[in-house]
Length: 313
Image 1 (cartoon, rainbow, N blue to C red):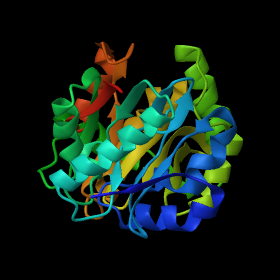
Image 2 (cartoon, helix red, strand yellow):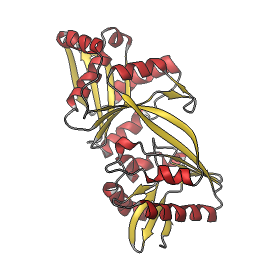
Image 3 (cartoon, one colour):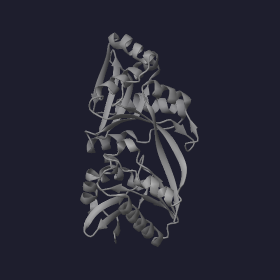
Image 4 (tube, rainbow, N blue to C red):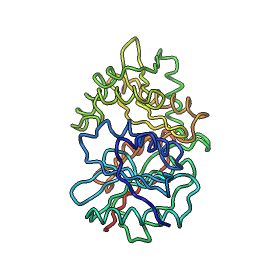
């Protein structure tokens, strides 16, 4: 089967987004309104794959010299497929993408797969095909998530503290203004503990929220009007992910952060299939943060692998 490969251009905005909405493994992170908030940082080399005149797949990507990444500005990437495409067709599509990149003198391709919990229907064909092509698994992160089809696995001690603090006078608010959490909690905490800044600036997360008001949500917890902790959720339909979470020293002493997490886990239990708390890995996956792992396991999370491949072309 012959496929037509085309580099993304602004004129492709609508059909790209339509494919993402209908795909079996795409999320709103691949919507062009999300991808392009940081377009000045990356040389976009995203591809569209056509069968005749029909768009059947896209490949979100950026270029660095003679290497291509899928996509450095996103949590995951890879080949995003229309539903009901089988293995042999996926192999043919990816082969056409490889040929296109080779013609552009690309020598190395990096792919970070979409984590399986985000698939709208099973979409694991590329795991096998990358193995078959001799791709190297150069990184594997432990992604921690709660499967809501299983009984709650929150530790007894955390549930005891949650019930104990239910009468503490906490107030939980869903807010559209992210500045309080960013300025008073998140930025100071990350700087103090890790010497880093959030991936998204306050202005960027506010912009993204304005574009995706149903997908990017902010929950803060207060006591006597004082902000103690907050969690920024990305809502993907069948999955919610805690994209950011932080607490003040006072919030830590009052266990407000755990209280907010358990509140949200219970709130979304009947609405989504998974509650994702992200990775616990550092140093390109070679090391994991034991304290963070313990915290997430005690909140009921279990491990789902996030795989990164490199493929010589």
